[in-house]
Amino acid sequence: MADGAQGTAWWLKGNFAPVEKEVEAFDLKVTGALPPELSGVFMRTGPNPAREPSPHWFLGDGMIHGVRLEKGNARWYRNRYVETPLRRNAVTTRDPSVFMDKTASTANTNIVRHAGRILALEEAHFPYEIDGELKTKGCVDFDGRLKTALTAHPKICPETGEMLAFGYAFMPPFLTYHRFDREGRLAQSEEIPVGGPTMIHDFGVTRTRVIFMDLPIVFDMASAMAGGMPYKWSEEYQARLGIMPRNGTAKDLKWFSIPSCYIFHPLNAYDDGDAVILDVARYEKMWVKGFDAPAHLHRFRLDLKTGIAKGEDIDDLPVEFPRIREDRAGLKHRYGYAITTHEDDEAGFNLGTRIVKFDVDKGEATIAELGKGRAPSETVFAKAGKGEDDGYLMSIAYDAARNASDFIVLDAKDLAKGPVATVALPQRVPFGFHAAWFAD
Ligand SMILES: [Fe+2]
Image (cartoon, rainbow, N blue to C red; front, side, top):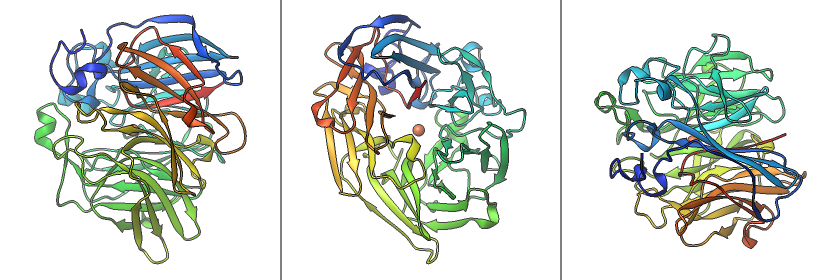
């Protein structure tokens, strides 16, 4: 499928367009110096429609791009589809039956590592296990115990090793909480009552609690039957955040009504005495026309004693894909990282040219400006020491002038100086969703 040849939708044009080939290349040229302490695999996943134009950016077949680092060398790049029935067989995301078959995943949204397994995830189906060289091993249903789809955004507790997650669906039960033990066994599933079949992309986790986001993007049967994105913005649906102890049940839930908004991604959440702090990338609205307006970094303070929820923007940069240092997940954070959006905005959600480091204690942001036409994908933190920002940021950046992509590494303590290492990749990497760094 040639770039842009199959349609004019923005997610099929420019650097949103899929690539045609699975390729690999070894011992890539490094400009600058890769930090020798970084050994592992960087992965970035996203939709890459294989056989036909996808009806929505979110609905293309999952393709993972990987870069292997070893002792200062870039050993390989490769890109591979996640081999699911959706990718292999006649069924497509336009077919409503894909909502009934939990193995029919695009697996295009996120990759996480838990209990020795790397999982490629999408939120309407079961995850797929892949190996460190991007080969698909198979569908994971947790010994038949998982009865719902699994979110693409499980959270791994750096203290207990548990994986906390949920599944949502357009038929009851609309929301189910799942807690996996450190060995990867499904230890608890709890039905969570919500006001309707909302799209719940992600959630918050603290040391002791989970936070569900029941927000006004609601299932729409007509859209589903038409084969498009089956969820729509609702002016009526009450936005709520629900807090529950991590080992709790629905009777322990406490709901907070909040002003209407949509949130794909929290940055992080943590306990603050009787309150929970939840930092997110918050949109005023979503999908009234498209990605109508950018998200801003926003802090909710949810007071369990008084029942009062307060929220305010803590920065005005247009951002998405907020990330923290993963071993601070659920703990108080000072730093967060994100990329800018809505610049050079032909696509409606074209990505920006900046990587941002937020210091939420100081209320400051420092920026790596990659330059005109150079757009980073989600940026992940690779730790190099104990200090919260003692490490590196990794991303794949598209360069419009060359119609090519680079793997870049930045020093998290000094973003403004730009990449410390740049690795030109052997093929363009389309804009996609989430990234991960799996250190050896
Ligand atoms: Fe996401």
